[in-house]
Image (cartoon, rainbow, N blue to C red; front, top):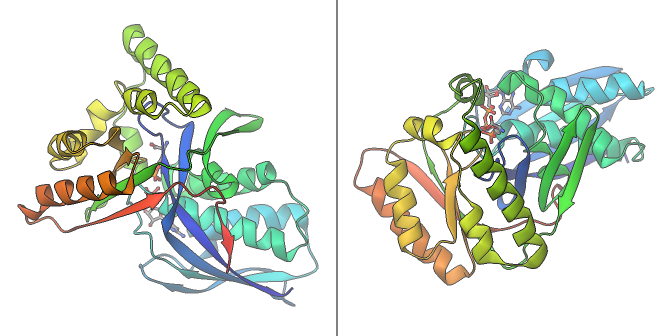
Length: 306
Ligand SMILES: Nc1ncnc2c1ncn2[C@@H]1O[C@H](COP(=O)(O)OP(=O)(O)O)[C@@H](O)[C@H]1O
Ligand SMILES: N[C@@H](CCOP(=O)(O)O)C(=O)O
């Protein structure tokens, strides 16, 4: 195989109480990428459609991730990358991660799959650092592994695959403003009150237990964030109104998707998810802010070959 086309899905990181460790994969929105083997060695980005992103390899998340796997594998070929971007950069649904994860997945396929999913994640994290200034795996892991994942440790990287809730629906609203992950990280406190830490890890543990016991109401009750949300919600217009509308219309829980500005909610039926989607749309419809919404099941498979 000398060429491959893939779908690299959007992802929701943090999931309220799991800053930098929890994440889940979506299936409705994602980027497409085409990776081709070349006789000429090295990495080239030959086409980017959708959003204005750098073609320069070392300035593009996909290019840096591709260089990471390429320099480790030292193949007798090179690779050309085409990115057909659907996930708006700075969206909070893993735009940078979709590029980084997708390209390492594709190169691994073209090399005959010599690397594990964990090894691929370490290469992709190098790309994430271009976007956010740090090598976090909470978007990358669900993209590469699929489903719900928890990053147990970064050094060495250890990713836990949590049970994937098959009958939950994620509804997202993306106000069309950009919140760069790097900026949304800079505003966070360097230390936190012990009381808040206890509440946060209590919710994280409860959420993991809820996934293992299919207790979706406990899962919803665990979607609380007393550490990051108080700072980042200020970057998202009408955040509290959207959250209230989602919960009042039957959502199990609601929170900031990744570093924002996207907001996610989880519902246990498509009917409820659509009711939530309608209610949160009405919040922004009363403003000048452009937005889009979508509902997605949790994608158990992650990146797909097209
Ligand atoms: N291939 C790429 N895909 C997405 N963003 C990229 C890419 N290459 C570089 N970037 C930069 O990374 C930032 C987007 O990453 P990030 O802020 O994490 O957005 P998101 O929250 O959607 O992941 C933007 O500044 C964008 O210019
Ligand atoms: N843990 C990261 C997650 C960033 O997610 P993204 O979808 O906004 O890239 C953070 O919160 O900084």
